[in-house]
Image (tube, rainbow, N blue to C red; front, side, top):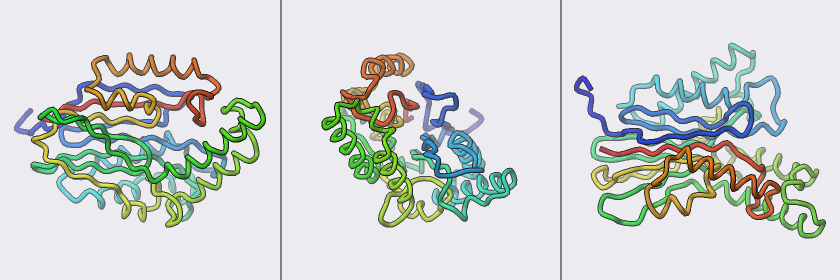
Length: 277
C-alpha cells in the first residue's frame, strides 16, 4: 500500500435502483466511507438537476478534499463545489433557494484511534464490536416524526376508504402533506438534511467510538430498513446482493404497501459492509 495505513476495508457492497436513475450512492477510501440517499423530486423544483446528479456531484467534490482537516469545512466546501457546477450548467445558484435536490448522509471517518460517524437524514450505521457486545444502530431520527405523521394519515385514510396504502399517496391530502414536510427541510421547525444549505451542517449528528473496539460497520439506506432487525443480530452472513434480492421479493409480495406502510412499493436500496483494521 506504499506506506498508507489501511483502516477501512470494503468487504461487501450492493445497490439496487427502484427507478431508471439510482439516487443512492456509496464511496469509500482507506480512511473514509460515505453513503448518500437522494430525495425524490416532489415537483417542488424546476430547472434544477435531479437527486442522482446531486449525490454524484457532491460525493465527487467531497473526496477531493484533504481528509486530515476538519470534517465540517470539507462538507461545506463540497457543497460549494457542487453549487458552482449547478450554477455553471443552469444559471441558477442553488444556495439561494430551498427548492433543490437533497440527500440523507452517512459519513464514517478514521481519525487516529477514533472512528467518527456523522449523519443527516434517515440512513443507518450498524456497528459490530470485537468484544461480543450486541451490535448497535446509529441513526438520525429527526425526520421520523414528519414521515410518521404522513404514514399515520395514509393508514387512517386506507382504513376509512378501503384504499390500498400505496394508492393514498396519490391523493391531494397526502401529496399536500408530503410537500409541506419537504418545505420544512433545513428549517428550525423542521428537519436537517444534506442540501445546498450549509446551515444544516451545524446540526450533524456525530458519534465517536474507539477504533480498536469495532470490528465491522454496516451502512445502509432506508430502502434496507425492512432488514434492520436482522442486521442487528449479526454481521450479514449472506452477500448483500442476495439480501437485496430477498428485499425485492418481500416488497413485491406487499406491492400495495398494506403490510409494511411506506411511500413506494420499491425504494432505492444501498448497503456496504466495512471491516475496521
